[in-house]
Structures are given as structure tokens and as C-alpha cells.
Length: 490
Image (tube, rainbow, N blue to C red):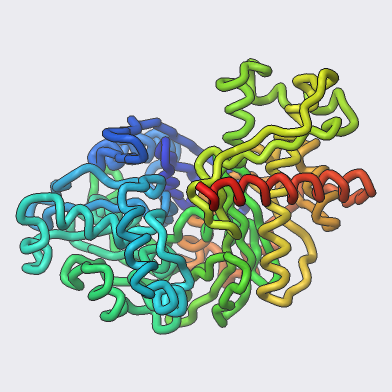
């Protein structure tokens, strides 16, 4: 039995074909254009998203034919608005990175709305999430708000857009994990919240139906996939948590991509964060919802790209491990990569990065090692917050994403956490999680635990904490505090 995972990301669309053992039998990938119409605005052409995804489907399935089921995972929070009658987008998609509604969020906070929003959604008022983007489109496209209230327009995150196109408009749905990232879903009831809809000025008529993350939603009708059940949906980070088989409370994963996304399973009850983290729905089976704590590092692997493209001290990202290994420590150099502000737990959008502790003896190797430490220290800070919020002991941290191939980074991460760091055999965990959710619905596995039994580790990094590691972390914490203080003082 083959399960097709559609992995629709921020810069590319991919399709990966798995069997029940997690073995990959086909892949396809297409990049698409990133649009930056103004400073801090980021957009995608929804048609380009769909066409790139469709092309990868045929590439992945060329040797095997129709799969037994389709699972979908996607960039979260990105907003697509389209006409129900024609299926045509009415504007470009507003991407999760877009900051155009920052002033709206600031005003809502000033009006005292954040307490209710946080209690009901587990999120904070930030332009990262979908709701203020939806309202912006309805306000800035002539006639859109009236059309939306009449039910003529449909909103969806990217999963909704893919399902709509796969079924030629027969189904307008989103799963609970994606819905929980909109600022509009009450994560305690699992339904859209009327008070939030009124506050954020989004008409209910534009919203999709919320469905479980695993279960047959519809059958595809596009050429080559006719009759194939669409049976699983999850946002990319929740899918990675499932793909890493983090099925029990206290299990956690960290994805090292452009940013870092750390999620901890907290079980069937949402845990409110007192430490600047987000509470989110991890996935839903039937009527049962499972929750996670989430923390986001805005600049993770992107700091290595900066070393390459900004400073020119490496010519290829893969060089950073060897370069950083040339020195035993950073020589006191500290890098805080707040290039786009500080994410969780600080949530300081005005903060900017710093490079300190430089002497005449500083080399590019010291800076490279400081960059790797910055990735590890930011992630460690999130996990410490999770431990405090959830009261759960961390057994190990499971890792994925491109930068987890960096053995030195993984060892630094284990040392600073004083916990085991485990890299899986199958590192395509986001796509695997989507395939698993779909496969469970069509009998590829009879229970989540059966899927988890197939998870295996490639390498385990055991902690070797030292006084030097603790001192480096102390210096980094002090540097972060200075960056935040400068931002707060304007």
C-alpha cells in the first residue's frame, strides 16, 4: 500500500510516496515564486501553489500509479481567498511571514483584547496568524466584505485550497490543527468562536468546515487521482510531531529549517503557557483533540545562510560544521540572530541582531561556532519554557529538518539541554506524518502506536555538559537581554 503525502511549503511544493514501512517510493519537488510587493509584505500566487503541487504529484506517482490515500501537510497561517463559483483566487495569498497587519494587532492589544484571544485560542495577537490577514483582504478588495457575508467567497489556509482543487470545489474544509492557527478557533470546543469572529471582523460564511486530522474527507477528482481518498491533514509542524512518533505527553521534536519549531505533546488537555509559548491543537482523531505547546525560533538555519550570503565566510552551508569544528569554543564571541525580531518566548518584533565579544583574535571559525550555538541556545530556551509550563520531564528531543544533519550542532544541542538528542532514520518527518494520518484512516496501520513502532533512530547524541557550555549560555542570555532592552528603549 502506498500513501501519497503532499508537503506544501513556503518556498516549494513537494510530493512523497511512502509505503507502510516509511520507505520512500517516489518524490517530486517544484519551487515557486516569492512575491514581495512592499517592505514586510510577503505573497504567493495561489494558482502557482496549486500548479506546482499538481506537477509534483505526477512526478511522485509516475512509477506506481494511483496511491491508496492522500495526506496533506502545509505551510500554516497563510491566507487564500477565492470565489466559490469559479474557484478563482480574488487576490494573492498573504503568507505567514507577512507583517502588514502589525498595527491592527497592536491596536487590539491596546484595547485589551489579548487576554480573551489567548484564553480561547492559545495564541497571541500577532500578524503571524491568519485572522487579521483575512480581514485585511476583505477590507482592501473592492466589494469583498459584502461578497464574503453573502457566502460568495471562501477563505482557507493552504490545506483548504489544496482540498478544494483536488475535489474541484466539492469540499471546503480544514483540519483542527490548521484551524487552531487562525485566531478564530476556540481550541477548547473545536469550533469557530463567534466572539472572536466579531472581534477580528471575519464573517462565518467565509470559513471552511473543521474536520479531524485523520479520516476520509473526500475523494479526489483530478486526473490521475480519481477516486483516491483524501484521508489526512495537518499543519507542517504538527505533522512533523506525529511523523516523529511523539505520541505521548512530554515527547518533543524540533525542526531545524529556516527557523526552528519546537513542539511538545501535552496530551488531551491544553496547557496554558506562562512563559511566552503557544498552545495549539496537535491533531484530532474523531472528536478527540490532542494538544501541544509550541515555540518558534525565527532564525535557525537561516543564520548559516547569512554566514554564506551576508558575510561570505563560507561558500556552501555544508561547510559550517567543519569550519566551526576548527575551534574548541567561540573565544567569547556571541551572536544573537534577531534579524527579524525575537520570537518565543520574547515576542519582540523590534529587536535586531547583535555580534559581540569580538577581539583581534576572532576568526571566521569563532563566528561560525557562535552561529551554531545561537541555534542551539534559542531552542534550549524554548524547551526550558515547555518544561516549566507542562511540568513534564523531557526524555529526549527528536530532531528533523535540514540542519539536523550537522553533527556538531546536534552535540551542542544535547550539551546545552543536558538531554539526549535523537535523529531519526527517516528525516522527511513532516511528509511522513501526513502520510501516517492518512494511512491510519485507510488501514495501513491499525492504530497510531502501530505506526510509532516503525520509527527508528539514525543517531543519538548524548549530553556532555561542561562549565564552558554553561558559561557560553550565560553570555548568550546576557546578550539577548541587551538586544531586547535596546528594542524596548526604541
